[in-house]
Length: 332
Ligand code: G3H
Ligand code: 13P
Ligand code: ZN
Image 1: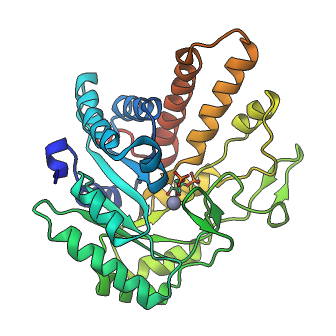
Image 2: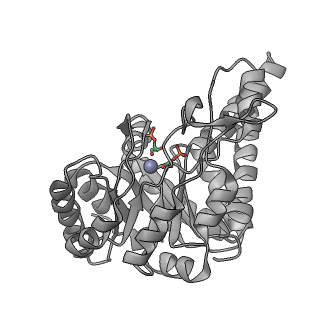
C-alpha cells in the first residue's frame, strides 16, 4: 500500500476549487511513456500550471503499474529539479471496476475515475458510491470522478458507438447519492480523432471539416443544478489540422479527422468545467513529428533522434493548451 502523499502527489480538491473560482481548467493529459511525461512536466513547469497526469487501464497494461507509479514520483522530483514545484495529480482515467480503482488507490493514485456511464442509472450510482466510500475513507482522501451521459468514440478500453447528452435533471441526485468529487458530462465531445461524422459537419473553403457547436445550453442547466461543483470534459482534443496534414504528407492515412475547436474549449474552461481531458492531440503531435523525421532521414535508427523531436513538439503543444486554451498557465 502506497499513499499518494508519499509520492509527492496531491488530490484534485484544492485544484478544482481554485480553478472554478478563477475561471480556468486544469489540463488532464494522458501518458504512458517517458517522453510524454517529460513533455508534460516541462510544459507545465515552464507555464507554471497545475497538472493531472492521466493513466488509462490500457496505459497501465502497456507501461506496467509499478513503473507508472515510480514515473509519477519521478515527475514530481523532475518538476522540482526544473526549478518550480507544481501540484501534480495521478489520476485513473475511465476506471471500469471497483477492483481496478482500489488497486490504483493502493498503488499511489491520488484520484480515480469510475466510469459507470454505460450502465443503467441505478447501477452507475451503486458502483460510483462503492468507489467513493473506499476512496474517501483512505488515510489520505482520494478524489473520485464519476460520469453521467455517454460520449461516442473508440479507444483501446473505452468503447461507445453512439452518444447521449447528460440529463441535467439527474445530476443533483447522482452527486448526492454517490458523494463524487467531480462529474464528467456529455455535451457533444467524444473520444479519438473523429469527433463528428462528416455528415454532422460543414466544410470551409479549404475543405476542412467544421464541427457543430457543443451543447452549452446543457452545460448551463447542469451548472444551475450544481452551483460551484467541478465539471469535467472528456474527449476534448482539438485535432489540429497542421498535425493531420503532416501525418498525411508523410504517408499516414487519417481521413475525416475533426476535433473540438479551441474557442469552444476556452469558453468551457471559463465555466464550471475545471478539468479538460486531452489525449488524442498528444498522439497526433508525436506521430506527426516521428513520421517527418523518419521520412526526411531514412538512415536514422537512433530512437532518440525521432522521439526527441516528438517530445519537443508535444511540449510546444501542451504549453499552447495551458496558455491559450485552458488558462491554467500561472496558476500553480
Ligand atoms: O479516453 C480514453 C483515453 O484517450 C485513453 O485511451 O485506453 O487507448 O489508453 P487508451
Ligand atoms: P481525446 O481523445 O479527445 O483526447 O479525449 C481524451 C480523454 O477524454 C481521455 O479520458
Ligand atoms: Zn475520456
